Image (cartoon, rainbow, N blue to C red; front, side):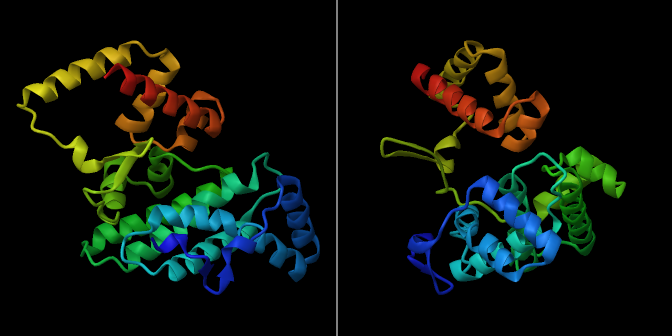
Length: 257
């Protein structure tokens, strides 16, 4: 696959360095205080692996991986320019939505699916508001917050953002363990099928056996469609804890089934 290339945009990915969080903060302080180009270049180079990890989620859509990488770097530079040192947030946590936003904006602008001008304009305002809120609050905003920022209805914002979202292949992997990959197509079934009904009953029983926090995380993630960052902010734990509890819950359900 394209994102396994060793050289992307002329950069040997095996030689990329990774900065520690305190090193990033020190470089940001130097950049904001003196405008040091050397510090900026070092900070950019020290976060290119983060850009690579983000663009992998956008690969496989017919886009050149070199182009995605360069666009991701633009998002990284915007994050450097807008990061607020007075906020208690990790630089990498702030970077990811900025890089993702830049990539989504590119895919939206060059999408082959035609969307009405009014929806596209609303989606563009929503993305601008999202970037503004990320800069202001140092975390990814909810759909409600974006809607309030631009004075629109929540459902209109959801529809607008979904209208510019790239379609997903039925063969997109959604889960993989021990070489057994689960694809989106595997989750599509006939509602009248007896086996499907039995699976649904087993899943319900498995969910009932979960703890309240695990149930809450699955509800927020898969029924309300919130990101792990949004879930973490809502229930008051770290994104890493959300990720771990989510995986544990899914594995427990899988074992029951």
